[in-house]
Length: 141
Image (cartoon, rainbow, N blue to C red; front, side, top):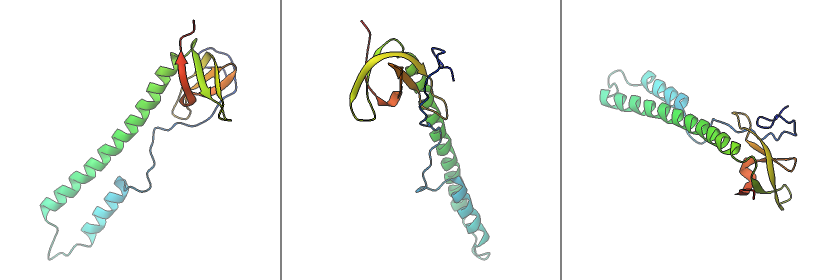
């Protein structure tokens, strides 16, 4: 597959970036809605839920939904910011830590931009390096 910046084909690094966050330890809007419906279904008809409590729970449900939207938007913005930054790396000298833990330095010849399913990758000396593994960027003299 041709590289997004240079048009040259190269080995692809696939470490999927994601614009969603999965937190199984926290309740989402679906769980909250199920609890609210169960509460309404099993309430005592002789002693119904106070309307102010119902409004409070509805407001909380709206807040949960909006917070989930913010998390999704922030993750998407992070992917876009990484893509914008990656494009400015071409022609610079970069240092990264390879898979063996050794520090490597070389010229960034091209960059494959990030998408919702993959992280931005800089090609340094023919080696695809995820932008997140870069430790130093310098201008070439």
